[in-house]
Length: 441
Image: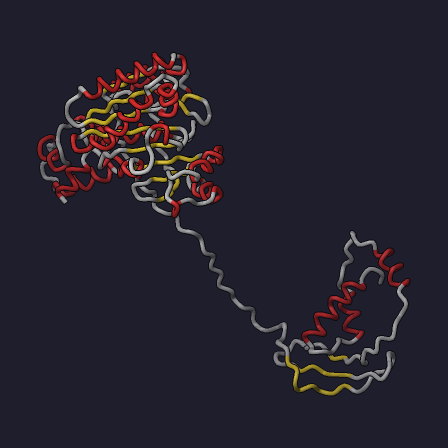
């Protein structure tokens, strides 16, 4: 039948290999082709024309040997027939050497096991930063998640170290980000320095530094938009040296006095700020990368911000970012590792990815009133009631809280403690008792 020659060749070749140099008989080939359906996409008229145009050649191929295909019995032998010509057949004789497994043998049950990568436990970046306050350098382009990450970090610091005074300098002045700092920093200085002259901007920043230095006790100063601040100082004659000296003094001499310094920049080129060489080693680096800003990552690895053993490819960074829904990758110099950014609480009420207010809050006034109303409403569940008590307590440890404020007669304290610890695991106030509990353990 036209169009089936290819199927015949393929079937014969397969059996030629299995029969170790012998062919099935013509009857068996015809039986196979009777079950074959021609592919409608094949133009077998063209194939036929090509075949007819080929002149037969005598290539000296030896005479073909034929064999019966195995029957359905297990261990059946092939039977060979030798033909003297294309139209004659010889006697069929048994072939003891060739044996093929029967098609009727029992099926094999295949045990399929597919390897899947086990999800890695999320690293607690915020908890690590909050436990011991150090000097830090934060790097990330706009939209990389600096604001959310820093606000969660200072929130945890204030809960774990309530005596530290946090002084935040915000040269950008974006009102939508007020929620990041409201109720979390002790002093919040805001200005829109892009709208200010260099002289005016420098004067304002220096006044902030002076006010910070007058504060007694342990304290943390955070200078946001360090790149923009540096630009204003460079454009004011003789002032860039003052900025460098201030940063160097905070980083080098402040730790012994309980002073700590964070600077937030959009690009890792910090030499103009005096942060290079040995001084950079005194700052723990945090680099945040978004898939939308691969060139920013390429700029990072061109500097000394990230150690050479952690300068992975941009593709690898994007793979790390894709491991969690946030879609950000974070390098943390405290452990010299990359990991995906976990989901953090957005205190600002504004989602920069979608350019919308969270929970459809159209304005700061609406979000503020919502927050005020929610604070008045009484907690509806026992868990919420317990968290409210833990939020307000002056106790320094869970055990002290149980002994002084809970009146649960007949309930073992260990059982109460276990329940509170489980309740705190996913709570924003989970860092409040970390220091005291670790000392007890």
